[in-house]
Image (cartoon, rainbow, N blue to C red; front, side, top):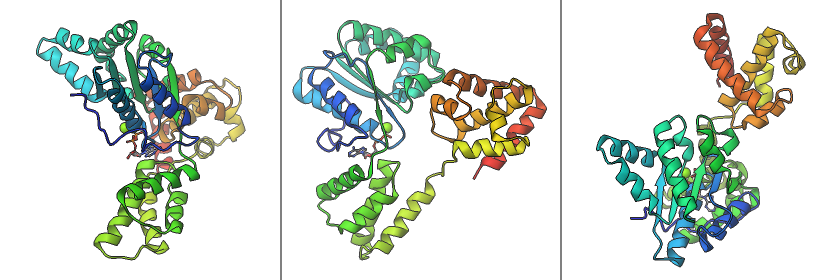
Length: 340
Ligand code: ADP
Ligand code: MG
């Protein structure tokens, strides 16, 4: 059982600037599994941008071209569960052996392995065995390797051996194509201005984009409502309101500086005065918590620091809030001010 879903294939994964590198690297890997320098191929990006779709498409295409190869798709969560079960049942070696004889191993959402040292360890050995034997590994993650936390260094360095390709948010043209293609496949007609309205307003998640169109189709076919711009507006609003609004890093810096009665420029400055350092660390901590920005991007926006400084700040805030009562109060007050 390969666990592959044939409805996720390359033909219905529409190409755009946002996914060209990842999609074409996937095609290259599918043409020559284990035979390109993209090993492992790591596809990363935010939720709903097509990681799972692309992961399946690679496997489906390989199975098509090389029916004799064993291809396995599995989520990191399920992999972890299987590993834990094997330890309980005393057949850890069978588990390892099962994975070592696969030709193409596709693991979805590897960020799930963070903090799970036992599973990371066993995966490290499986990975090495497959890689040494020229077998293909494909991974997906919600973050780039540099931004992954609580994953062992030796595993992270392996993740970087091949190619890391990002799935970005699709531009307007690509969003329109995705919607048109979906309507076409479902045999549904929809006025062009409605399609464009939906594509214009739902920007950051392809799953939501499709969800809005599916709602529209359902409203028109089950409730016999005419598809009008007003109906589209209602539906789009529900989708946009349900997705948590993201605060900006600028806004976080403003709130933190106001709270400590300093200027944003002071917060960003190079000074080592303790209360200013703490304010800066809190801003970094909340930027990590409330935005999707990478550590590197947070650092560059908060006074030109590097990603290691941001990581250190997040750990310091975690530590201080469990040991220092006054500091914990800062964190609680700021959380309230920042929550929407
Ligand atoms: P992720 O795993 O990154 O959260 P998914 O792979 O589950 O995202 O994709 C969410 C939905 O969006 C799926 O239905 C998928 O088919 C669709 N999708 C994403 N990107 C594209 C694309 N470029 N073309 C067509 N459909 C896409
Ligand atoms: Mg997914």
